[in-house]
Length: 193
Image: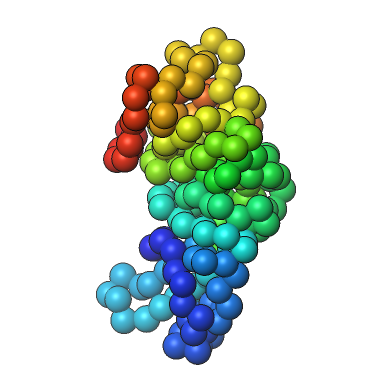
């Protein structure tokens, strides 16, 4: 399984039968595909997004169920959501989280909303030990208040960009969210374990 973003408008033409589309919905679309282990054939491909810029930046595979958990960021106000925890972008850009089946069908798809006029990117993600919750994080200039919880380590945005770390059930039950950062700029969160 691979994820990223694409600006291509000929994915279906070049990958007939993959499930891809020849449409680019905005400046870039999220892009997820599965290729077999010996790299000899494409199993399926999906490209999707809203009217803005959409990028899948992290993905987890749960081998027992075969499900995929995809995270990224979007500037689209019409990113495709399915049974979302948060149905709107909030600010200028937001994170997104999705649960896909191993065949690429969407179980749920949601924004991880930023605050009004602010930005958020989702960059890192990991399962808890039981694989029934996701820990995820990224960079933000301010999150929707529903994404920061009372009693968390740091409930106030500190500087230009802060890191954030959140915890949510694989059914989208939100557990906790906190900021981590100083008065200047935190960038490029690279890992979360």
